[in-house]
Image (cartoon, rainbow, N blue to C red; front, top):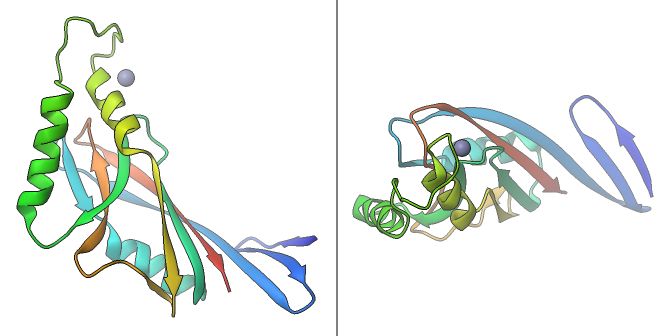
Length: 155
Ligand code: ZN
């Protein structure tokens, strides 16, 4: 395998006639409150479209310990309300057994529950999300400015 690095992308030659493109892009998200889900599907699709990859996959990664990323319903906003309420109910902000002195243990727990990355297949240059699915940045200790890292891989 031969790898060639350029400032914009990395290509791996895995067969004589097949090249896999990789491109990583970051963008920022301003979150409005302590707990919030922000639909970032449009930004992720913009990165995929700009990469030139038509067949492959995209990973969406959040480099934070009190935030996450997930895929869920985009049609009825009550779904996101209920997910946030259920997480809050399962992991209350204040608990007598918390030891972390920063005071945001609930946000760390929620981050681990939701996870800090997700992957979506790309076909025809588009995210293969279902009709009612969106990619959401999950804030658990806002409001803040957060970072999202998107890596597109494919042909
Ligand atoms: Zn902390």
